[in-house]
Amino acid sequence: MSIISKDIQKAISLLENEELVAIPTETVYGLAGNIFSEKAIKSIFETKKRPFFNPLIVHISSVDELETIVSEIPKKAQKLANAFWPGSLTLVLKKQPYIPKIITAGKDTVAVRVPNHPVTLELLAQLSFPLAAPSANPFNNISPTKPEHVERYFKDDIKMVLDGGICKNGIESTIIGFENDEPVIYRLGALALEDIEAVVGKVIIKNKKEENPDAPGMLEKHYSPLTETILTTDIASEIKKYPTKKIGILAYNTSCKSDEIVSEIILSKASNLKEAASNLYNALHELDHKNLDIIIVEKMPDIGLGKSMNDRLQRASYNS
Ligand code: AMP
Ligand code: MG
Image (cartoon, rainbow, N blue to C red; front, side):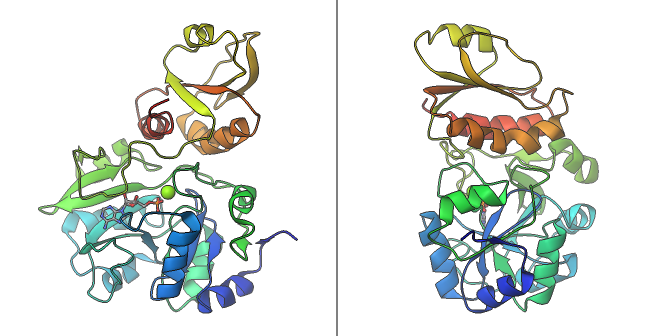
């Protein structure tokens, strides 16, 4: 029987009983548990096979709840929360003492956001505790943007995927921390850099492991298909290098019309970066299940959400 269901009451009773439920958000599906249940939080790490040094994001239902999770709110953090919540922005701030350290990987800061999905906002409003929810994929795999992706990963491990349809942004949240009360981007994501800078002015990006030991989850290889994945600015010449291989193509806006290709997905024929971002992971999931030898991916234009997609694609193709 399928574990996908729209029954919010069932999700509530599972979560109240310290069990996990996969939840829809506008970014990707999350694997959620009660932040105050050690059993639930441990089970998130175990189910995902996620190392304990990689902290979780806390999901709350409104901007007003922020002060119950964090102990200090810099002016620019409040401004960003007011501007973008509910939405795809995660803030990393000093935690309240009662936020368990297992969630924060032992750190004094906690990552928090208000997701912009009606089903999960309703769920959070009815629960008496916030939810910790990393993406609902095994560690290092592609994040899920449809209930079926989660079911395929975890049908034997969890009891329920709360069905909220397809994730409309389709890429993880943008994560911002603060150094001397000034915003620093730890992870590029579904909220474009340009939109953030329009609210708080120029921000620094420190999204590489060596630049930022404070963001323990920023691994060089991450978000990857099982199939070897190659990132390129020139699909046509890349194809020529692999005459004997079964090739899949992931292109931005135009078909490369070549006989060597077994399968091709175009992310946005209209050259719309938002549309491309929302299709990205689903396309990678599809190509990864076609028994290909390699997936050749076109680099996106390096602006707006294209920057965030390139960040994920670089990690997906690391070492390939
Ligand atoms: P995920 O929930 O899978 O999208 O990953 C959450 C990411 O948030 C982690 O990989 C970290 O990079 C980041 N993160 C969470 N908590 C913190 C924190 N306290 N300090 C810095 N980065 C954090
Ligand atoms: Mg993740």
